[in-house]
Image (cartoon, rainbow, N blue to C red; front, side, top):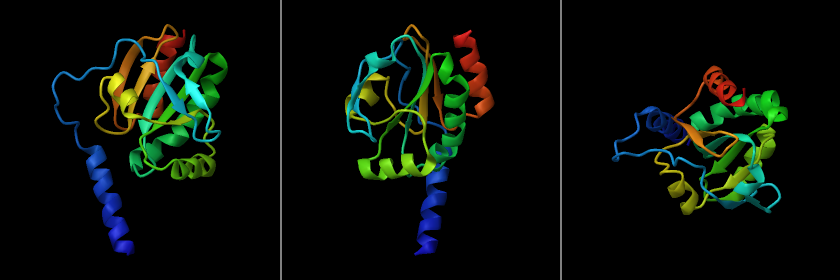
Length: 165
């Protein structure tokens, strides 16, 4: 059993580290799409309009994705460092079960909004074909950068400082 789990984890890492497949000209939407998704903690709907005027890092992730889990401490740190400056991390989980995501939010003490994805939001962001996939959004709602895969904290800080200042 442990061997099967180890093999599954290694396989997930290999898939996550592989280059993204070419699927045509896939680009981020120029403007952040409108959405209304369920908050995993409260169950309340969260609308994209509630983030108006904020810089955002919107990240698509899953609890079973090792690079996604590896990013969580960096995202918590980013939220702590820049939250008071009109910034928020927004996590959108592609998991199938909300309860699994709730447990992860509680266990990792995630300090930013976490919502459950639907097909429309992944499509409207220009297509999310691998995870983690993240989008840096300016205060004006413009998607300024798309990231595929794990993003080092230093890269996020550098890019965020360019749009906050």
